[in-house]
Image (tube, rainbow, N blue to C red):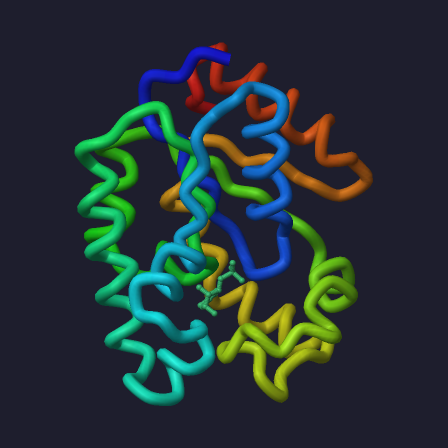
Length: 175
Ligand code: S3P
């Protein structure tokens, strides 16, 4: 796949952004930026430690700074943290430098994926389907406003999801 813009994968925690980014790399040799990984490496501490020691706002600023840096690059697949859409300036920058692809999954599916994972401070002690559903509903307008493309990941394997992204991006990437 030839892409000239960046592709930003957005969506709720556990919707499959990292797995899809890795598969896009494998299938189409696209360079991947895993935002959480870059931030944790630069800070030399985990995302949970950043939240606990420096607070959420500090982390959100690191996300904004990284997106600003990515504006000068092209052709990259960026696997975003689930909360990047919460800042309007992030959405503006993502749309300026590429296409924004929203991955969706049901709260039940998300719960199964995040159940035994302790790396996400936002979900600490809040991993019931009801709590996930409620946070997802609160974030839904942010995700939907940001998205150029929406891909429902339910009942699809990762290769199928990547092929759907490719097909839709090649058609222009707007729905
Ligand atoms: C967050 C999602 C996480 C990570 C941080 C906050 C969020 O990324 O950036 O824990 O607010 O939704 P993933 O979506 O990759 O889990």
